[in-house]
Length: 71
Image 1 (tube, rainbow, N blue to C red):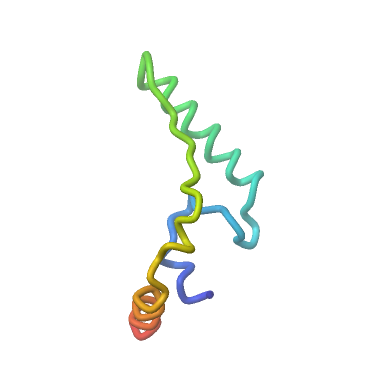
Image 2 (image 1 turned 180 degrees about the vertical axis):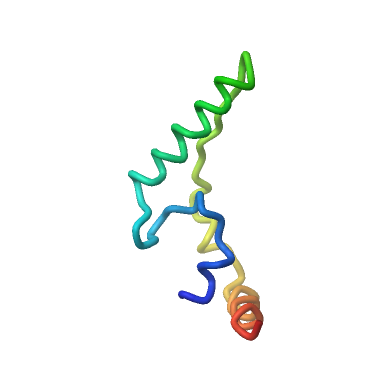
């Protein structure tokens, strides 16, 4: 939904035009370089919460999207 695109952070590259894996790797490399410069030791967490979107209350989600579209 085009109206929601301005609400997304740039690092959200999934299923977006001119984004995707290559853009995600660019962000990954950028932040790895920042961490290497700033920190002696750090951790990176990559995760996917299985079933998260199917567990969202769709009525509430639709309401929030409609509210955002009215702005």
